[in-house]
Image 1: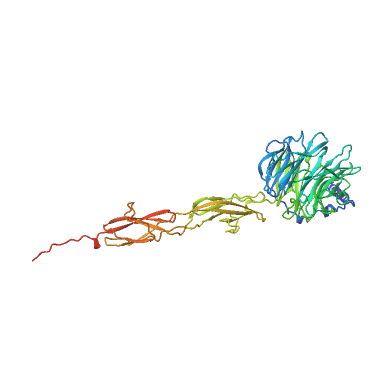
Image 2: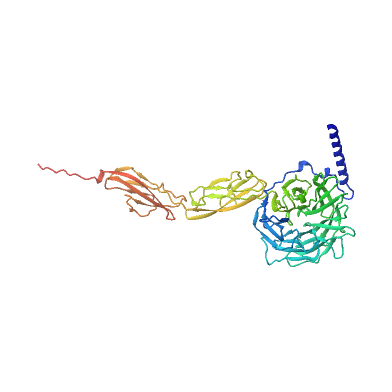
Length: 619
């Protein structure tokens, strides 16, 4: 019985795979089999990830996050719906919140729809759009320009389309660098009609208004067109708009290319995915350094349910298909989001990141997978165990995933720039001090501390004085000139994460002129009243090697018996026997002094002794 069950299971797997292969290979879409479309295991890797960070500050009713990358500030802006408001918060490229969350629209609607955001590198600000619910199923589409560091009351909310044509389940925008415009697209239902279309409108990025009125991008005589996404191709100054049809039998994914000014190219829409069952939730992104797009979608197959991506060339020719994830059965729609490097920038080894929720209707895992422009992929990684929706934006060296899980969380996928930090002990001391430098506080969100390396530039002159080292601790002594009373040095630390990404920071070190050291010798060490003692202060020193002046107090009675002299040697003879303490005081160029004493013993005798005269007896 056991062997029979095993055999039947084996036969069932063969049948399942055969059915899937037939469903996936159709002349209409020219898609290869899943096996051949999936890169070999040897080309894969596991992307790095930073810790998961909550950025929504209060209230669990935070939904529909979207994110854009600011290439000038090297940071991200995440926007989301919070109850009846649209809010946002800045996030560093290390995945750390910057400042507090702020209000973009305080009362967007009774139930405002998902905000979408794009960044304008020329004006260094963002355009945020959202649906303003004025009565289901239609809505106004509104927007607001947000400066890079937060809202400005000068830039108020404005209407993009106020004719209530916007369907709640689809709108998007992209920034075009060459025309310096945003292209906004949405699902549109013309007055008196029932079939939805894809509409668009050009918004001037300088905030001066619209380049033209709204226009139809895609329509069909019998099918719906809905749920658009859009990407800008810098290499061609063109857009690709992706969307799905809705024939109620077999949804497919379509695309339409537009010029930078919104003129439809290539004769209109073309098919991107058209399998026997449904393909939905299309998403698209473009890398600035590659003349191509990556389109992703959710495919509802029978049996099986999967996430797929397909390259589309700049001139609209569908290419290779990759299978991101294959599930055993239909669970729920799993919308995707895709990102690459921002417009006008080239990412390190240009790559896309695709994110999706396994089952957003029932709070399940959110995954991500990197897809290279050369058709290799990373292994999938789990962003969060219990999430709902996710969006992603690409920066210079990493991606930020913003996701919904009651609150809004963010997580970096890819490498992060290390954060250089160090302490100096002491930070203010004399030139004889050995300063201790400790860079142990340096960190990296995606690499362990053991992988960091450090090097030091003691005076921040651009030339590093040490080689790279894994030891974060070191010491240094500063030298200053004798004529310098105080010198402020800027010590620079550079940290690298081992992937060629570095960070630097500087701190101030104050080095003060050190006082001299007094020292002298006496020759001979003892004598009598006739002895001429020699005093030599040449062993005195100045740390900065400057000239010294000396003066002497022969009895250490507090009154110096000589004036300041530059000669460090002198002589003296004591007229009376006794033990004498000699005090030397030395002075440097900044009138800093030091003193020391020695003793000498003088005995009776010699030429200065008393003469005793004997009486002369005359005979």
